[in-house]
Length: 321
Image (tube, rainbow, N blue to C red; front, top):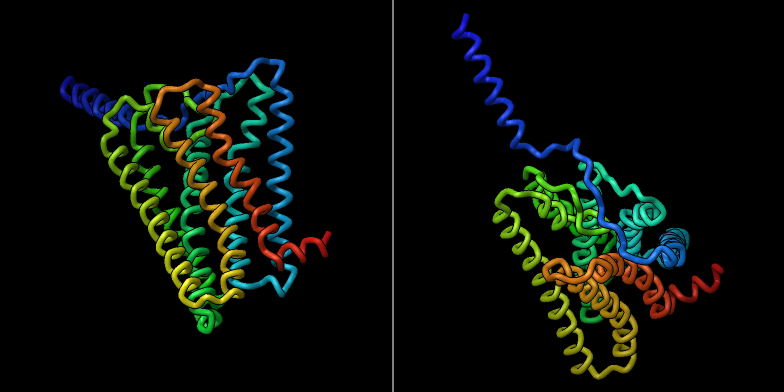
């Protein structure tokens, strides 16, 4: 009887040890507050709310307009719908929560909710790169291979490319978050106003070497493929424009490529700032501001840039309003 009791206790201790090594998904975490004087809380809340509404209205409006207008159902505009949807996803994922936290003293968030927010956040950031890579390919075919454009960039091809953009982003981020949620938590304060992968694995006291290696490889592969493919695409476009010396072709290239390049550069530099501020010690307000601007600036400017630079879209919007 004594032997049986010892076996049971040993087994119970082993089970407890195994359970202790797992992340406790029932933990309540706490988000960092935006360090601003109380007198500025409502002005900041109003600015963020107004910006969020502009992002939602403009991007939803463009998607609806492209769906309703048959003349706009072309590969370039269908691909732009992906970018608008991504801007809506990225900002809706964090801004309502930030707005709520600005007016509340309770900034607790469940582990599951935090992981979900981090997944949507990382997927949105990754998909922005993959979508813009495909849009660059679309511009390359339209300008460098105009006679083959209609046969290459079919509706079926656009759907496949869109699926590849989102599928690759979801797959890479799933592995990234999978490595993070295996870690045991020993802290509860998220040093940011919203959850992302870097903030989550900083809560662990375990060895995060694998996370750092995969995270670095993830960033290098994404940025290298993104910057490399877009640089190569624009080099080919510039070469074609110079050799053909066609004013109409050059005007078309300038009109369609400028908007794409401006959107890409805005996304790239806001992303760089967010990564740099995660790695260096700076003030809470500056770090949180950079994190918010990473979502706000591209989301609020993308639709405006494309609408102003694309004649057909601009004329349809004028007619619509």
